[in-house]
Image 1 (cartoon, rainbow, N blue to C red):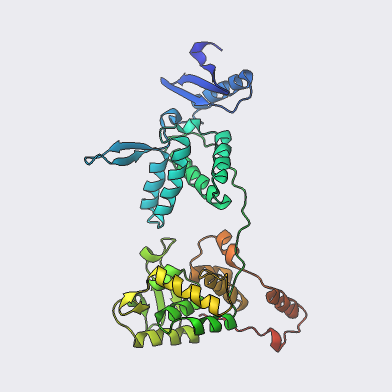
Image 2: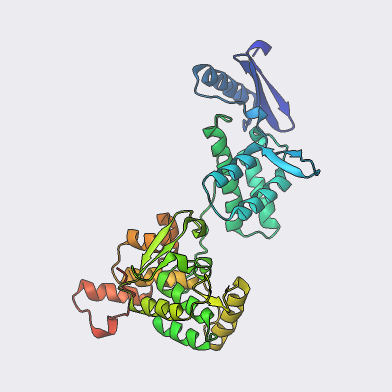
Length: 366
């Protein structure tokens, strides 16, 4: 193909396209196995750009772009990483530190100055292989690749990129199956210190909320007269507010009335007016599960237990997700654990033989 219509050249084992459309030059690598295949792709690219099917300047988009501020520190100002972090801020999402950690590993492997067009499926596979060899968990690698994929998608949305490489994230079967029965909870509460740490554990069991959402709950968001709790947007992991009525939940209502009598400051669960620290709760938990014979159980298992209990009480799945704070069905499915007893109850219902032995206590929420 003549130079005027573009050209194909080889750099190492990769065939590159170099062409100009509308006065703009484009250079991009390919996954083509031969020069002939690369030429076919070149014709396709030129045709797609002339017809408007492709837009943007992918050869100008980097993984991350930095400048030095007045103090000489690196400031992120562009690239796929910048697009992701900026959108994270615009959406008001939490856990930004986590995605920054993901991007740190991505930059260490590819290099911040790497152009988006140079990140091919083959290089993505190489990244995954390298991270797994370093000892990273497969789900962690998936999360990192998902962050990179989000950056590419934002690039397409903003008109900076035309296409994104294919990301294959294998499903990881690492969902936990631990949960608490009422008897387990009773045994655990006996071993916890007789203070707010035991109360917050009971609260998490009944609500299915995340640990931080319970620990840092403030009275300003508990309507004792209206008997409902509102989780403010800034404290919700999803960035969306949440409401949890407790009027028809006797154990939760009794718990909050007890905490109301012991109130001292802004926080519902406190020690001498100060919120319970994450470390303080974890240490008390570790000692209690050992003494109660529940080794291996995690605080997060309380959330899973709440989902199962609500499900047993025939609460609709959409309502459970709204009460406990799951945004997607896929995440809810990871927590909604079915036990052998659940299966036995199902068979009893099928044949109309539901007996007292299957009458499992359940949390009932209005």
